Length: 215
Image (cartoon, rainbow, N blue to C red; front, side, top):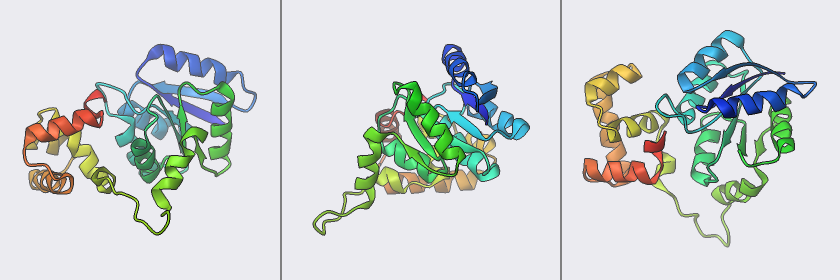
């Protein structure tokens, strides 16, 4: 299996490359420091599996890059490798096309199992988080599961949210995402409506709470 590792810490990339290359059926062909570099390397190497960190400041986050890579290179299976034990991130990365979700503090054997599972066409979820995923879709005693508005944001709205929170203007956001200024304005309006926010300070506070400004 050809594998690419995307993580903003060089020591982490080196460590995972070392343990994976010791597996007889795995080979790390490249490493990336952020989502944009990961996209370019996937385009170049066409790996079987991409290990993607969620948080890679100051470059493009793994959450955003996952959707783009899955859309353009569906044959590359994506395993999210993260420190976030958070069902909201789990929900969104699966929605954006990831096939696996593993915490960085997991045993090596769990990572190997995740890679082999997604390579064979399956989905691998950190066992400790599987209950959260089930709870998301199952109704108990006929009651509706409480809906977090974050979970109904579109992929483009998730891209716009951190850029607005970081202070980028409409024109700058439009240039970064290759969309029109009017489209940016429409996405911002939808964001505020869906999240029930009234001002930019509230949006910044929300982004901090959801860890978007740590990306």
